[in-house]
Image (cartoon, rainbow, N blue to C red; front, side, top):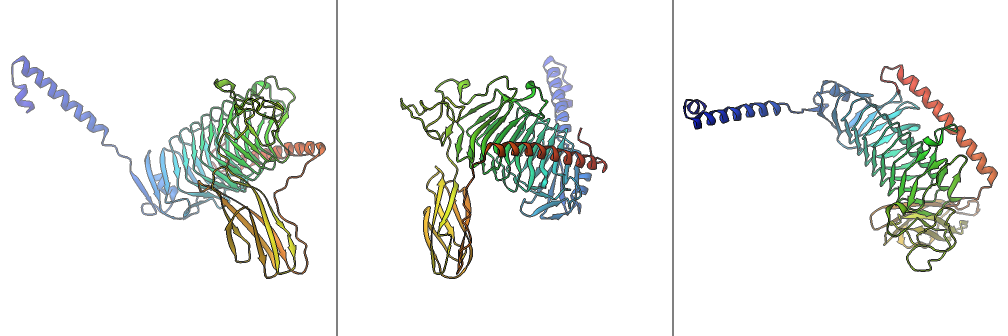
Length: 494
């Protein structure tokens, strides 16, 4: 066809010839682009080890890892998709030898693994000087002195839908910007949920942080957004704002962060503010804090923090405080008396802005001990607006019951029984709390209920001093761990 068209001598023929040649050339060019395809490497079919598969893979290849236990330490230095069969049955085990997965390439995906057991102060997953890394749907555990995910100068990382357990920091972000930390759970043995250190522009959204010392640490961190998280039962504070050191200048305080629509339940302090400026809090809910909802530690603060949505315009609204005792005089849903609420909020909400997650405040048996047959009344104080709430009681003697927040149960035989109450809301989320009952001839056991004693100022000051020492000690230990890691040739934190 090309030859016949080009043999024509008319202008029309020549134009047709040129058009056909250009079309053929473009087809050749397109063909050259689509001949490169990313491959799939199978473990153990193509390689017995995950590291072997990483070594043989080309950039942007996918590595599919079958279920199993893989006692390895991985280094990923090229763009790859590393996909496990599922986090329940595909385990990368560092065997206490060092960082389990070390990433020093951009555009890496890690999905569907249990990643566990680095060395004592090590990291389960470490990302260094790399961008656009995706860590999704994993179970991650580093031990109580290590970090689940550690980011250093790693921007645009996505950490989503992971389950963290038994970490010093579930996620530790240092000198990194624009992270997305979404839909994770850190509620079994994690000391701190997320730390943002010298980091900017990150979103921490819809995570659950339960137990341990802090939900979030913002240390010399700015322009971050903390939204719709649940932070509960933290022994020190739900969220801490602090400078990196006592000598940090005000220009490097944690500032211009937005904290919105979060729920703080049963923490010692809800918010601990230590030298932080121009941060905005609104539409958060504060419930049953042990000592105070907000503590302000100010020595060199030069600018205020804001406790309502003044920057958005429209109806002014602050936060919900369960201890606010003022009145709404004009019926607009904003408190008008006894201001500022909790010493900070001029526009307190009369009802929570966001749905209140289920939370068992107290669980009290009466009596807690006695001789058999022993009839005990159990009464629970429960928060939760996502009704209906379903109550499941396990009395520890082989019997269970469904009912309400108050039930009676008779123990017909002797023993020390652990009674567990699980309350589930309409979304399927649940919360459990236990107490003890001794049935026998001697009554000695006291109820295990949720109580937080008032602490005098001297103890608080002593605790703060101890906390500073604790942080210094942990940082020293971590520095020593980095030095040890450097001797392996796997990289150095700069």
